[in-house]
Image 1 (cartoon, one colour):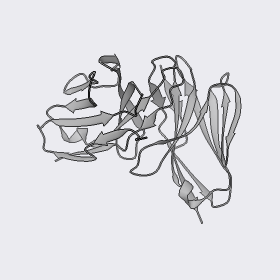
Image 2 (tube, chains in turn green, cyan):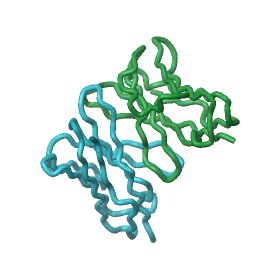
Image 3 (cartoon, chains in turn orange, purple):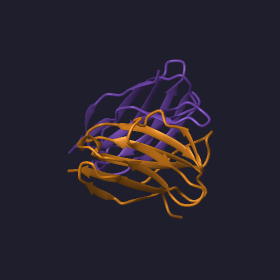
Length: 114
Length: 110
């Protein structure tokens, strides 16, 4: 019973490049959440998705960031034209149930922007 | 608005008991979660409270008072491996995202 999977685990990009982070939720989970964590700081909510729908993107910057969760395949967080301030750990979590919604976290993707 | 407060850092001795407090002010409430996060790793679930009172699970217990907007995590018989950050998170209800507190970094000393 595989847990939440994220890839890549580490990603290095130069300023101006694009970063694509992937998340495969646990089997049977249709709710996906993305969080960003800066060094020595707490988790900051970015976006909540269900299959083919963005439910809440109130935590996501208006520019350069986008997320999707297609009918088939993983959820993708996309950062265009990365800047040094985007360097952080990005965690994906999934849950099976929006009422009792314990979230199960993936191992994270550590993005470094040079 | 949404606001969750936790102490930034705590230190305790191996074998002792430590209580980590969390206060919250949120627009809705459908449960409070505690997660443990070791440095460089993903958060892992510890406990969930939705009703007032104490939930016990082995060496860990969590308490909730909804009227006071207050929770605590109690760790007994501390071990060195308990050195980690402890995150308090509140969910507002159906389809609501989690709001995480800043986390409390616990150091367990020999």
